[in-house]
Image (cartoon, rainbow, N blue to C red; front, side, top):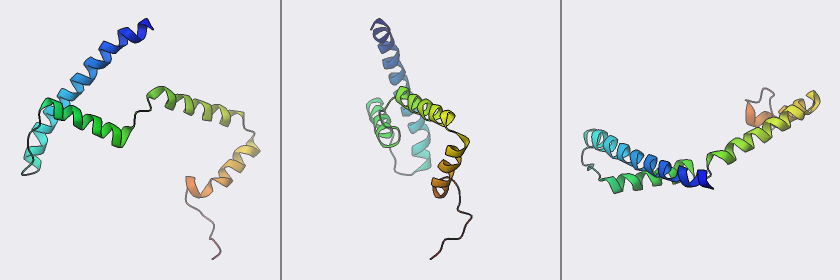
Length: 104
């Protein structure tokens, strides 16, 4: 619990710094790139950062993603060569182009 409390100011400082960087980049690139786009202030930059996180990144955190990958890797390692071949056969259309012609 103490580690989380010590980590919180670091996270808040990182978010504040990232918002500042977004504001600087937006104000440097966008008005010159698109005629009619306006410069933004710090709070709009933070809002843009949150919006991009919602649209493109989600709020799932990194630990859950790594854990899921580890579980999949452990399952793969536990498979026999026959189970791996069956897995590739079942997922053939999703993983790589189908080399066999389909009957229509």
